[in-house]
Length: 72
Image 1: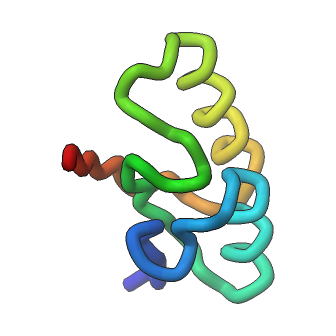
Image 2 (image 1 turned 180 degrees about the vertical axis):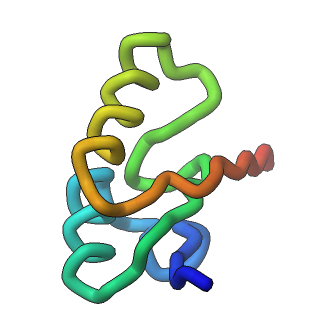
């Protein structure tokens, strides 16, 4: 079993580099990014923006475990 977090909770105010760093520093191995949060990973990102996010997680030990959308 791996320990992870969802940005809905404690990481909603963090950008992607901060999410990755804080996960590494605290032992979280994965993260689910929810929409409408400070990391700005949204459904309308371009292909190149999605690749940047994919690469940021690919270059780290933190797994991008999932993407969650919330439409208010």
